[in-house]
Image (tube, rainbow, N blue to C red):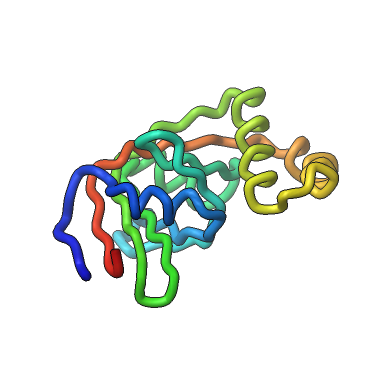
Amino acid sequence: MSAAVRRELTQAERDFLLEARYAVLGTTNENGSAHLTIMWYALEGDEIMFNTAVGRKKPENLARDPRASLIVPDGYRFVRVEGTVRANDEQPLAQADIRKLAFRYYQSEEHVQRSVKATWEKQHRITYRMPVGRVYSSGF
């Protein structure tokens, strides 16, 4: 069953997004083309939280145009959320958020700690929060 575009998530969509699935984030490149990235995310209340490192394309695109679209697929079933992001590059918060995301996907504190030491603590991280502005889903 397809749903019309809405401004709020249903409980079934929330449950789906709370599972550790991968998302595809869409931002807009300077020339107007789409930039798509597979990434980790977390649903926190009515916001999608994600995190990245300075120097990548996402922060550049989102600084210029903070509108984004995020889709979480499972075959033909999916939830797409659109909104305008807020960035926070305060390192204690951004580092805590990448740890939180890593644990959500790795489910291993040992694996998280190895990644922190090998990579993330050496990076300038940015956390983004995207309030749910529009929702579209299929299969719910």
